[in-house]
Image 1 (cartoon, rainbow, N blue to C red):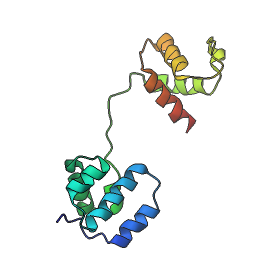
Image 2 (image 1 turned 60 degrees about the horizontal axis):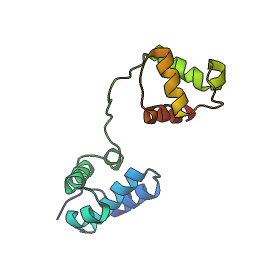
Image 3 (image 1 turned 45 degrees about the horizontal axis):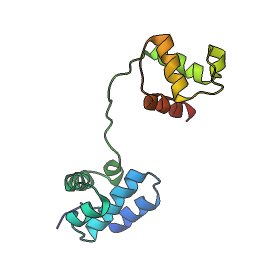
Length: 139
């Protein structure tokens, strides 16, 4: 039997009802199932998650609060290819139509943003990355 720590079913259910984050929901559903003595093997099959990941999540519940178990540690990733000043310029571009910068597009698309960054800074970004930049600026 896998131990989950001192978190009660009621605490886990309350946390589940208070979250909208898909990853947190999945972790809480697994935690509740562990409390109900569902095996890690069965949960792995049911959710398509490797057993090692489930054991990792269980250990996070054991070692800390529910909130800590639901969030991942910050991972900085690769450094930006653009300087902070350049990123600020990109933000300003996005607040105006691309036509203002000599592009034919009437609204910013990932392709248009990639083209502008390439022209202005000689930096190549994938279309997916430019899509994330646009999405983050819209938030």
